[in-house]
Length: 171
Image (cartoon, rainbow, N blue to C red; front, side):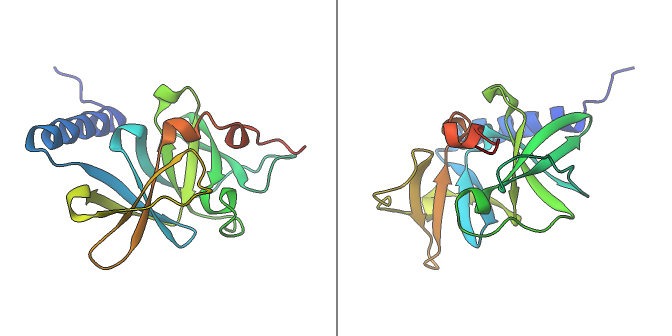
């Protein structure tokens, strides 16, 4: 009897098929989400999945934006409140959290706490905007949709190697 693939394997395979389909059709899609009242985009191949967890385990002596640790199918993830890390808002209160898991190929088990996922966004429907002059290196592009909504694109690979992101301990 053939063994069923795990949910994680299925999601990885689906993301890869979507990516190949986009390349063959010349269409590029990004995952959209909201954090801190702002709209964000990220490449599908830079995230593992979006999960909802019922609670986080707090960690002592950490930055306020490091909101705790979550166990997702037995794997521990350090959780960063993206809006608080960016200085856009105070960390969200404890409770149910939506986490965007950074792809494990970047060498760390980290997740971004987001307000909500928005699904796929096709770049063909977005207009490029000038990047802010003082933008962090991991903010790689800015887009505007037909409704006038601005979307900031994140490089998870760059974010995952940023010293400020990695230094969660209090100084």
